[in-house]
Every structure is written in C-alpha cells, then in structure tokens.
Image 1 (cartoon, rainbow, N blue to C red):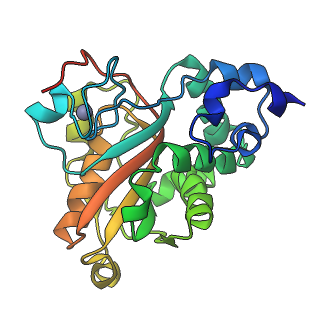
Image 2 (image 1 turned 180 degrees about the horizontal axis):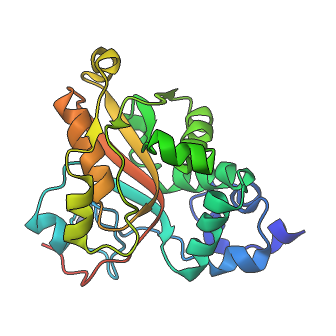
Length: 240
Ligand SMILES: [Zn+2]
C-alpha cells in the first residue's frame, strides 16, 4: 500500500521501481529523503539549481581536479539521510543495505555501464572487529549483484588505523587519511587497467575516497568513480 502513494519523483526515469526503492521504509521516512536528480555536476555529483547543460562541472570541481573521476550520490546528507545511514552503521539494520544499493544504482545509472568492478571503501580491521561489518561493503555487494558487475572485496586496504573523520575540518580529514590507503600486491594485476566504482556511505570532504582513488590509480586502475548514499550539498552552484 505504501509503495502506491510514493511521490512521483520515484518514477521519473521510468525504469525506477518504487517498491524496491522504498522497501523497509515508511512512506513518511521516504518522502523526507532529498533525492538528487539531474541537473548535477558531472564531476562531484553536487546538484545544480539550474541546468547548465550536459557535462558541466561546479566551481569547486573546475578549481581543483579530484583524484577520482566522477562521483554520484543518491541523496543529500541531511538529518533524515543521516538517521537512516546511522541505522545501517550502528543498529544492525543490514536490510537497509539492499535498499541503498537500489538508490545508488539509480543515482549512478549514467556511469554504471562504464564500470568493470565495484569496490567498497575499507574499514580498518580493528574497527571492523568492533562494528562487525563494513557498511560500505554491505552496500557494494548487493550493488554488484544488482548490476552484474564484478565485486572486488578488498583491493584497497587501510595500511594503518585512523581516528574517526567525524568532527574534523577538511584539512584535518585530509591529514588524517594521508598515506593510509594501499593496494596489496596480490590485487595489483587485477586492478590494472580496470574501471572501478568505489562505494562509500557518505561523501563529505571527499578525503577518504580521494585517498582510495589515489592508491588504486597508483596501482594502475584506468578510472576510479565514486558512488555514495548521501553527499553534503556544497556551496554556490556557479558553473563554467
Ligand atoms: Zn563538482
């Protein structure tokens, strides 16, 4: 019943199936999520307030190149998205992972055909022990299943433990993850010349995905794109 009263935006691309995009959520919770639709920055996936035409990038992307190629996010990171993502992270709601995989598949529909494999952002093994699962991997696995792409479980690892990124400035986050990520020798031949889609839950400053992308490209990956559940809305939507 609830799936029948979903807002029409769930249907706007024709292929979207609201039943799978809302599974496990109340209609109320679903309607509070600020899904990101075109037009958006072709670089970082930030939404534009007006349509600057195809392949336009935002001011931030034109000012500075990212280590990754393109990023896409299903929704804005606000209090509603945060509540849902925290449920996946800390409340053992791994059933939400399948839902998020569907959201990401829709948000990254334009870049998915160009991928060879799906890669989760890694958790440090010690943090994995305390949390028991890596939420990025929980989303990446069903996404690989959904899209028929290969799933690369751990081609990029954390070579050392970092403090939580929470509460840190952009510079602090960057310093926190500098030199942290590495591609194990056993994975180098497999990532070489591959187009990889890196999955994380939230994109804030991008320091974590930048670190992963840098390590994967240093190991020979042809492209590294990024897809997340939610991203922060960045500053002015000035375009070039
Ligand atoms: Zn951008």
